[in-house]
Amino acid sequence: MIEPQTSLDPKITYAWRFGRFFRFVLFSIPVSLLIFSALSGLWNWKAAAFVSALYLLYGLLFALVWPSLEYRFFRYEVREDDIIVQQGVLFRKLSSIPHHRIQHVDTHQGPVERLLGLASLKLYTAAGVSADGMIPGLSEETAQSLRDELSKRGGDDGV
Image 1: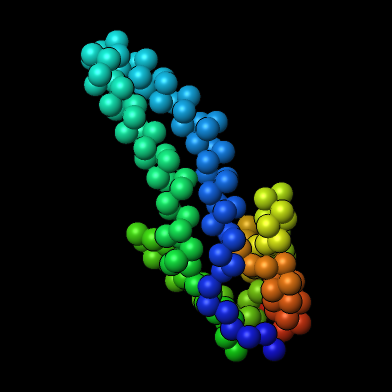
Image 2: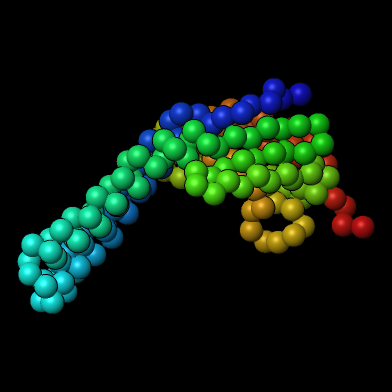
């Protein structure tokens, strides 16, 4: 049986930071330039620059600081009858996924996760076509062993 684990691999914060910083460069910087252009026509250029800089600061904080907070507040535990997943910084979400409701379990790796030796575990139930539970930032070995263990426990036969 797999030992219950309560937190993710700390390297997941690097993957989250990279993804958010990439989006920051591709999206936030051009949007801040548009904000500056639009507001400098309405106000003076100093006020437009201030609002644009605030938007960039928000984007940088979200890209660089928020992943550490997400990591700190993400917990999971594989219990005898279910899996508990807690996530959220400002708004906490606690989910319980009973083992007998799990239809199948997948592991997923993006290019950054693969580079860092991480994987995500996705849990699917009969409720829908998308993953009903996800545990990101597991080591590859932990994700594979959890996937195999949860698959062995069986799921709902649909009857």
